[in-house]
Image 1 (cartoon, helix red, strand yellow):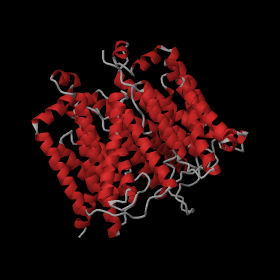
Image 2: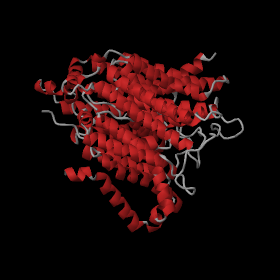
Image 3: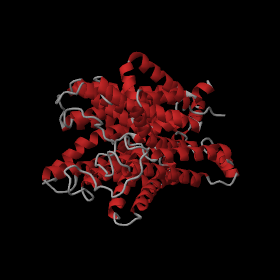
Image 4: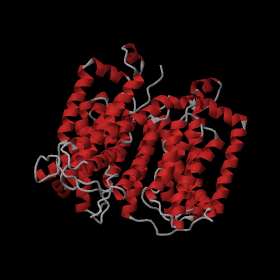
Length: 274
Length: 324
């Protein structure tokens, strides 16, 4: 009886995390730490609601995501700022700017939302596009060689700057879509710190999924399934403290990081980051 | 350029004060124009100095301590639980403070172990721990350890109080602890051989290894001590008189952890710069309170300026080293 609501809640909460994790995966495979996911998702959620929701909100959220990751690219690969610190800085700026603006002018109480089916269709299209991209030898080799050794990739004639720029833009599109879907498939409005660490859960899913697309998607949905338990428990009147249930995805994320032992799967350029 | 980078916090502070004095003299007067306002600034600065110093110490070994916010709350709940559980014994105060330090140190060891043994970046594990500690401390304060006599969700009142500097402010012994820690830290880094080897860990493991100093273990010990002191800062805040002496369920989110991160990063390689950096960030927080009183601007303006300063600092200071 509780299975259907739980699966629906898992889909609603899981798709944003999954899309963000897929975007982060592309960026990390090119050798840049994707710490910016939280800020990208939060900005996209904010912009999607401000744009009135619906398809317009989705497109504007995507654009906001690209803007944030584009800035990250400029900071890291042009201004040569350390990627982890730049990501943390952008996250802090996104959180403070959205909170500040939300206090000055609160978001509309309800905007046009999207159905779970629409969200699932968008996610399926993104997965298909990413699988096709990863299957293409040319794209995969360029991406992975840049992530393993940028210097060697350049010797083989790969334009590593272009690869990294494109991977940042793809990450921005996917994380922006994920962030926009969070309010549009959920409560239909924006609240301060709406993502509440989901960008970091997406990062944990990438690490736990060992930079493998299938594993990353499975890990994202796994975290979302635990996250959905609190909604289902509240709806079914099960008396478990909401904070205890809300802790489960973070506990799972930490356990995932603890049990991960095979370090060799980390892209080599990523290990040098920080 | 090197001198500008080194004195970045002082430059920011002077620019901010000049702009405020010229364009908002009323707000300037509210924020800094009386001894009470200055005491309030120092009250805000004392936990920030400790968290900023902890972040700086970890940065010296090449690691980023980002879980300060959660550790600060964990230290607070530890002293509240132990202090009220052992209320009848004279050792309750010391047991509470020791437990806060221990809990903080254990969290630091977990983060550091994940980095050194599993290769998990300390920022990812630290941020996940922040969210977990937020929910855990809120649950403990609002369910099993809640004060049954009160409608508001918080723990029972501590039977003792840590000393204050004056009866008219909340300025507590955290400032003395922070000052002693800073002097000891500067001495260790600049005047001892051990300090110089620890500093070398920011760029290479080779120098420390040559001196027989195990890099991984050293980073773990520094992270544990730094986290322990943040836990202690949280305990001091809860154990002091004023608004606390009980742990409120919404204690997490005071901003001390994230502001401490900005303080640590802003200070750069010169540990003495922790003082102006702390005053700058505490001043911003203090100023945002004054601004929200005097104008229609929300308090969040302080964190917005803080985050902008953080980004400017990263662009100026935290550049990747060119490969040889």
